[in-house]
Image 1 (cartoon, helix red, strand yellow):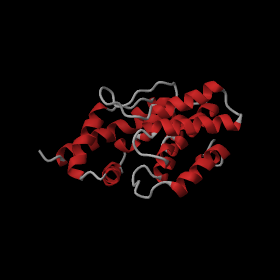
Image 2: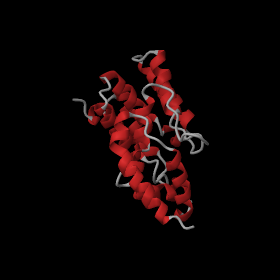
Image 3: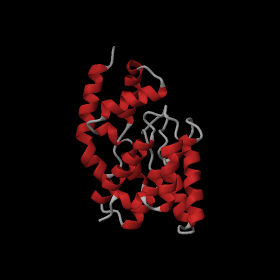
Image 4: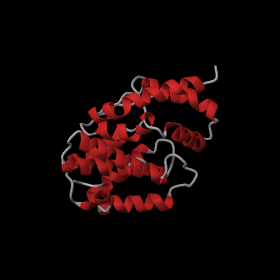
Length: 200
């Protein structure tokens, strides 16, 4: 059974994780190194639950490791940067086809939030597991803590952050079978609680 550690030790992944651990701006209280590891862990758990094969899991882990790598250079529109970093690293490794490089690139691009309509759109067959892992905190016990960290990172007062979070959650839906099973009930409870905290 694959463990997260074996993916962390993949040279292509470990090089990026090391860079993020040492070079990410410390004011990134939400989009930090710990978040990347969390997304990797969640993505692997979801992938195992839905029986993705070993190679699919590897591609998913690469996308998870690089999905916020663009924050090394800039905060707005960071996804294209991280996607390109992943593609370049996969090309340099000579272990992945052009199609696989493009799939990981698109998976990372899919983590961008839509301005309207559904919060996220999965454009590859592996994107649902990455997207659900990226927003897993919406359906977990640490929802409030993570929301507070994002508020601090964005320098938005928490009372202004809550309506924005409510709008996101209302447009969001779990995209993988495992995500729906694991996170739906808790997300609804988090949403119900959030509504009681919004100042009318």
